[in-house]
Image: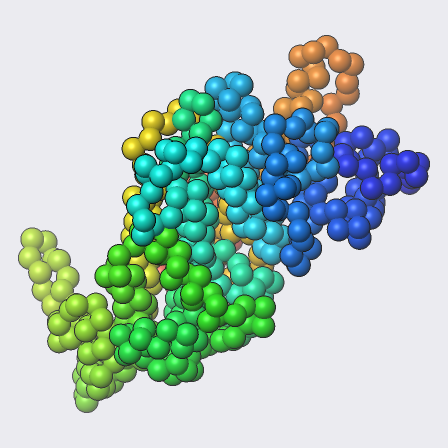
Length: 484
């Protein structure tokens, strides 16, 4: 295989390599990484290699160095990509998007934070109008946009096999600007929160950070309010895997989370509501039920945990238990109560815990958006997409299938732009060019999952059948797709 001349060593844009092949790209990235140059251009894109340590390349001086600079005037950096988007927005008067893609642990969320930090600094509102808009108890809009992250990470990030701080949800953040390019407001859309993690984790993983932050006992008043001990192993839902992570100081993180809520203008009552619901879910996992003698009917085996959950949620304990062991079901136009076995009740408790957590997370996002929604006039936005990364576990949840599928579609979008549309552009411009198929088309995999009679629609159909099982689902997949 042909090797590039030494003058191309550590080149900033790999599109400039004379011989462009996989070993040449890997060698260039490795050489740059060894010199702590973690950003490298690849044509229109910027490749980043996670250094897994803090580097001093994001401070105010670095922001200033990239502001308004052409790409060729400074070394590759996420700030340069951000500045290009900002300048293009102002020049073309069009909204822009930055897509950040990579497998789990690649550094997507950290780079998303850097993009937001860059816009918050360069488009900050002037000091005079800042004084007019700031409520003393809350932070400035720039602070609030940045502080949305620790709040979301506490409730939406967890330790996984490959990443100590893995985003278990996707987010699309829109930063809105006024006509002159000043920061106007922001909003966040979230997707695919991994609900299953609320009630089960693999051996080397944890549930969401917020549980362990609270149990760090940095704020003992929270434990009293939530009626919990500071031992995670007392709570079944949060102790199936690890409970501590060497790279994370849960006590410090709790202070950061609580302070983020303050900067975002949450009231003490709103913060307490989030903590109480989190506590209620911990107690859910400890509820016990037993079978009635000579009956297929479950009944509570002690009510202490249900009493605590109900108290924290502002419910009547007997109503909560009745809803679990004798749920009301609509038949025709009227409601009837239905008997439940112990297995059905424990399934219902898990489903309720997941649903409460998801609704709580959704409420928090809406509440953050209320703070970030200002009355400032807005003209354009720059959107930043940060989705959970591609990952394959020993045991994969339905959410992980959705995450990997989303990553596959994003990769297809990237490949289509990079390899297909670019070559079509050559044709349009009359360049002599033989079309190259790079073998990067992922459409077959995408079709298998999303087309009519694909995996998703067969699964949807199977869920409608009362007697459906894993085996019947597998049989249908084989019938429809094996060897086809």
